[in-house]
Length: 398
Ligand SMILES: Cc1ncc(COP(=O)(O)O)c(C=O)c1O
Image (cartoon, rainbow, N blue to C red; front, side, top):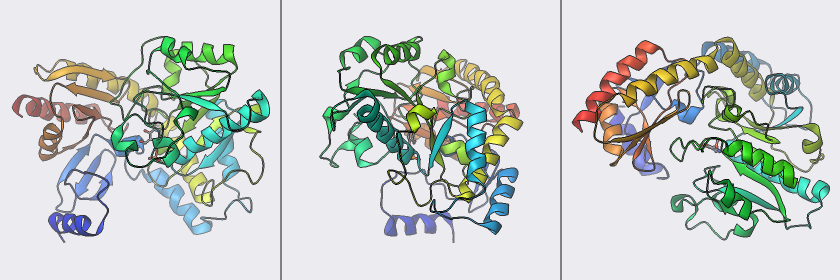
């Protein structure tokens, strides 16, 4: 079958909940993917940062296969000999006492919400069912009905209500004065992305994260940081909140936690917070299964041993500088932290993404006029130069 035939099948039998570029990927390795006709593309999206370690990383693949031969799923009804090692690894790497594993990012966000609410009632003493979590404009935390209920993007929330909006007041992202006006005696948490990825790599003003941390400390509120896309090296640091040297009470991770082999997510917190969840109160059939844990441990080891965080910082600076040097009247801004770049245009980005695809580069527009470049962190400087030549050509010709 060729690409057109696969696309026809997908259009006929699949729900149309995505608007993908018409490239039909057959295989991938490192920073490259190959379509069914054998054409190669440099992947500049990295599965929304889930394959920071590169596609089909051979060492993660080994861990996946070795574990798949032993046992894949026990459910949490029994213990297994892989999950404790993931807990230990996450503790050593991040400094948090404990973690709670789930599968998708949205589930981990739900876990953070449940933990914060339980803390609100059991520790802070907020009256039952009154806890509020302040969120930010432009947020993206996933697709469950609770989460889309506090999105301000109509394509996320419209038509899926009813919602409980009073439980999630929204402040203007980056505006600490506005945030202060949203705090009440029932506020139990503030939940933000340290950099908004789906929002188009939106970096808040310097000092914002520090001010959020201080506000949380002063008012006995939990600071929740969603690092699902920003974390694990993407921003040029292990976590994007390290740029302001803050320590959130709950950190949410996912995506690159498995290097793309398997959905693995988790929340990280200290014991006095995570202890509010008791046996039987939260869980998931697949969450924390041995296959997920084995893959996640190896995926984290690869980030450390291949120095992917340092790579992201160094190559990201290079990539962004070169993009800023492109002389195009359509570029209005280049926002970058590590290998995570939002190229803001004064026009629709989709035709540029399609032009780049023809040139062998895969990336995706976000919010109509922004192209996000977020290649696997294993990309080389030579591959970036190769991409830059083509990006310049397309920016000047479309
Ligand atoms: C910041 C953030 N939070 C949560 C999610 C949801 O993750 P998932 O798609 O794995 O549910 C995403 C996905 O893009 C994200 O970028």
